[in-house]
Each structure stands twice: as C-alpha cells, then as structure tokens.
Length: 154
Image 1: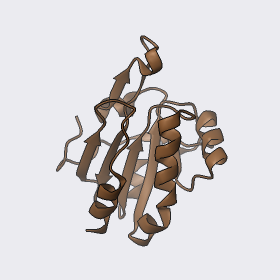
Image 2 (image 1 turned 120 degrees about the vertical axis):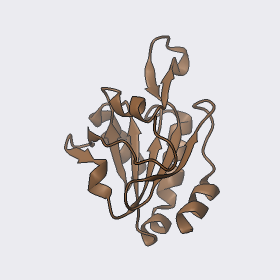
Image 3 (image 1 turned 180 degrees about the vertical axis):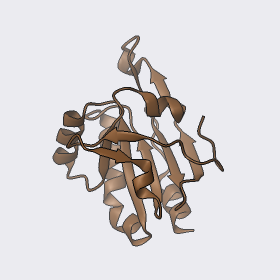
Image 4 (image 1 turned 90 degrees about the vertical axis):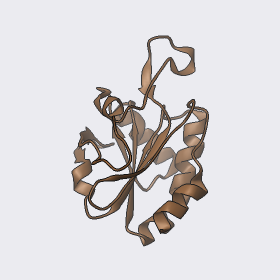
C-alpha cells in the first residue's frame, strides 16, 4: 500500500507510443500521478482536461504529471490526441501498479469482474516520496483541483 511519507512504489509502464517509462525517470521533480478509470468516460475526460489546463502552472513549479489507467496504449493515445493532453499517459494493462498503489476499483460501469483504477491523485516530492494521497470514494468523484495546486505551490 502506498502511503503518505513513504517512498512511492516503483513502476515501469508503456506510454502512448508503447515506450517504457519509469517513475524513477521523474526523480528531481515533483510528480502528480493521476489514476483514472477509463479513457473516453465523462468524468475522466473532465478531470484530465482540467489537469491539462493547469500544465503551465505545474511546469512553472517543476512539477511533472503522469496519468495512469488500465487502458491499452493505443486507447490512451487516441484519448490524449483527442484532448491535446500535454502530459504522459501510461497503460497499466497488467494492473500491477493500481494494485501496488491500492487504487483498484472493481465493477466500473456495472461490469461485474472488470477491474480498473479508481480515481486517485498522488503527489511525490523530488525524491519520490509520497507527500499527498487522495482516493475517490467512487470513480464519479473528482479531486479538489485547487487543493492540488495549493500543495504544489507550497
């Protein structure tokens, strides 16, 4: 389980171009990890677009953003292209990372047995330690964007 104050679990996942990306590639920067249940679903579209709208703010504070779902790389690529997202989307199709971060959600959209990421946000410091953790009570709830921005700014 990934908890505040602990080192973030390491992972390597495929990005939209099927290239491997590791969380350790981002050391030296603050990192926002936004777990999202499914590309092209209403709340996920809203959430990732809201995050993307704040990228200049995050970048000005040396903060990188990573989105993670269980969607396939080509689905994430189409999603990223549709909305012009300027941050990395990673595919956890083996569901190992959502398990290590304890953000597994079962039954998304009423699909019994389907396992996806729950909506969750983690903030890591420049050494990879978890400084903030928010997990939605259900995937329909969005994070507090102002709170995230405030935490990044401090």
